Length: 225
Image (cartoon, rainbow, N blue to C red; front, side, top):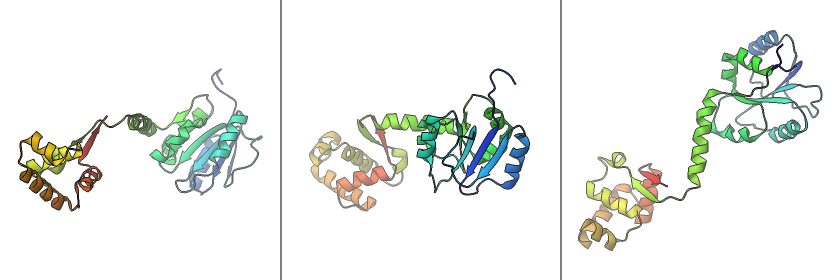
């Protein structure tokens, strides 16, 4: 064993929901012949006799993480989280001091890679999580920025709204009054009123506020920050 390897002899798999198939567990036993491997359906209170913990998360039953977090802070125990499938709901757990997060499918397809990592000091993060994590970081950073303007995406309403209705809806999104719309578009007040009435009927809403809200909900609008 080279100097970058660590000694691992006691491995515990906590599978609360029984999601790991027996054949995969048996294969893991074969590949981890150097280790004492145990599988349980309960999270033990004491981890003194465990070097590495594989904790299987379930989408509907994400329990025990607070306890795991406390354990990881008090010991040198290596903790790997496994899920049925990688989803954004698990991203917050990346802030916990765990050593890896990956799906069971990734584990089944890359068993040897995971096993090699168990005997090394590097973390395991499923490649699919890289993209999701980057997207989530960008989303959270963007959310903190104030919205400067709502832009109506014409391709989303093409065939649904006439050109004048699109122009009026854009100005409604900008908070313009009827008078301001008339001035900006060089429309008469009556034209503005009739266009808004037609727009409300097509969108099946009662007023301009509902129209702007519905446009956003329909995905017709892009937020510029």
